[in-house]
Image 1 (tube, one colour):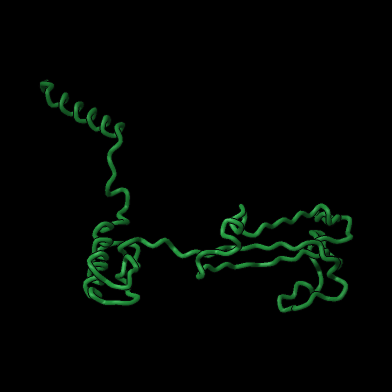
Image 2: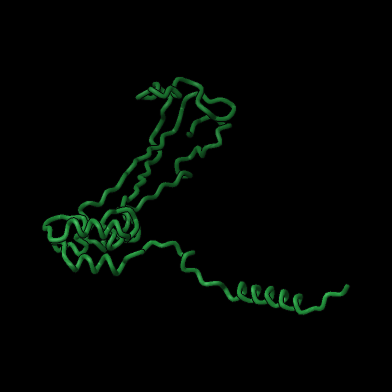
Length: 186
């Protein structure tokens, strides 16, 4: 919000408000020759426009008129001044990465994927268990499943103790051994 009120904390000069936007930042559009490879790519684009506000404000520089009405489609006459700037915001939506051999799409390569492969074995066309996308469910798809079986197991299941932990364990065991060797004084 920007207005003519001297107490307004928003910059009064349009030159003080900066707005920049570069679509597909970093030259990605040029790298793709102006087109994206994936025809299923989606993006959400939102345009925000900034105008100077010329209506009355309270001590906290908030509008005090009907401009606050949520159902208002157009601002009241005389409350919306000159256009200052516009800003475009975009988000590219991408599909989650595909885990090879995860034919059920549950994020794990497990026995359920094998069962789906078994039921679709010998089928042609767009089938879930066609891991190599060659149009048929065959032994090559079983190879993809078996090479990735158990993918997605949490890292803690395969954790190797750190040297400091092993050293602490050995010191504790040595202390227990020394305590057992001492004669009991009665």
